[in-house]
Image 1: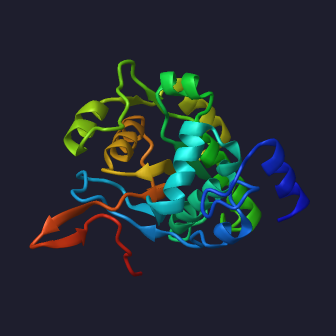
Image 2: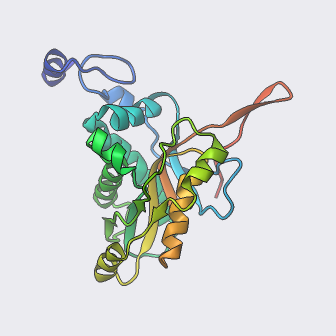
Length: 250
């Protein structure tokens, strides 16, 4: 353990989320075990018309602890490794597209959640992903920016604890794309590839609503990128069947 890690453990009482070793919230060994590529994912059942979607990891284990740590416990040091994972998911889309400016549009959190947490975690992840894409060259030389184009309507419920049908009903018409945000984007880019970013793809309802709101505003999206996707399982003929996190070969 380095002197820096020892100091962090003494003063902050921190330890690695993965292995529990005192020191940094994510030790070098556990960070080295994080995914280094992304894959295509499809929720099952999939919302009709959902754009191509990618994620770097399954929403389980260490990655799940990291997402919860950032969102619920405001462990800001986790924004960097999670943003780097999101960058992998974005890069999967960029690799399949012609060169163009890339605009990352984070799925917005409810205003009440942002106020209570003091953090818009998805926007923070998108900002880090943009930095990572430029630094690693994964943007293929394209200008990568983040634009918070979407807003939530009043009365939107927290999605936690809702099933697929309840999530879809809660999110119907929940997002809008105000004209001032569009004007700012138009001034910066005459043409751009738009990618919706989220932390976790669960049922796909949130991503589909973001896609709808942007399409209504005249902005078709190239894809949806997330840090992780849930693995939905059910019992079928006494076997457990993974339904949503699939590796689609190219």
